[in-house]
Length: 442
Image 1 (cartoon, rainbow, N blue to C red):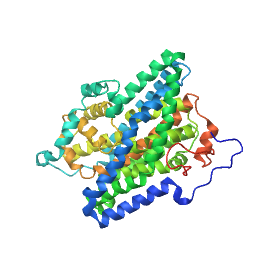
Image 2: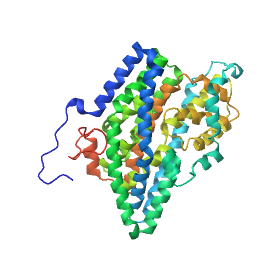
Image 3: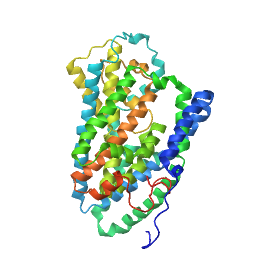
Image 4: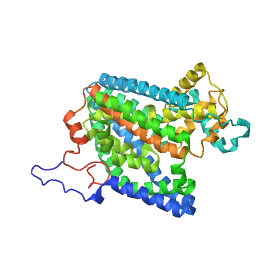
């Protein structure tokens, strides 16, 4: 707490802003990858992977503490159920809409038409590792994967769906016990303060991680590939941008805020997502930013973690668009009924896809495994450019979850309008933030 009458917090220098540090790191990574590509695998990739591993190390405790605290903070267990029901209704509607958008765009643009590739000529050896992972994404395996071996193993292994399940069950049990469990709830809140301070320490390394990840991408695939990625990648980027500005922008406007101001408010986190190709890298910061923007802590604790598994707009656009691209490229004609079946399978297989690099590609492979009309070997066609599409997937997923949190909070009457306006207009309340460099008010 800040004592009454204390002087206002010192404003940081321009270099003290995390978003500027990450932006400079991305530019340095592009430069290093271009001029020193020989270090892509040996130096840049380990640096980027190390930062993502650091973030993943704290994801499980952050989700557990936030979700348990959120459920325990509800006035009644029915409140938690009500918020969850609204959140999942939102997730289901907009995730399905994203799949439909990808399907429509693929049919209109037809980025794979005319390629006339024989599936038998494709090098399937490149995708064996992805096929094994895709096989694990069957519906039965997906349901079993949600259940951890023990109560603690979910937190140890860091499986996102398992952490969600354990957190919800523990939070519900805590709420049911009531008053005798208050010391446990208070202890979880205090542990949360320590863990979020740890997050702040880890986030200081964000520019280093962004440098390594971008250096690897450019060094591995070349600077020219950033410009000439082909019609599929261009179509995917344009579709995602339109989805964010038009669809999510309309939702934002109807909810009383500007999507462009929200993007500006989250600029540091979006640059981090861009640099690391992982929306998971900015998950802890998103939780803090949404609370600062006036969303009630219990709502944030439920919506944000769940959204990372069930509200993946960018991944959903990618799945139907890429699946139809492969079908068109290999000369497979999908009837309307087959496309609807593809959409239904994608609705199921996309749930639980983590926000880490490569998860969208694995989920696509899982979807094609269940759709016999489209050759699974066709994913070898997009293997080379998938890395570049992963940035767009992650950015769209991240923005979608931020919008969902504000909308659900407003829907539930748990949104502080004044705090939201202050945050989106660049006038946050004085006081140190929990996430990121303490000098960075963004």
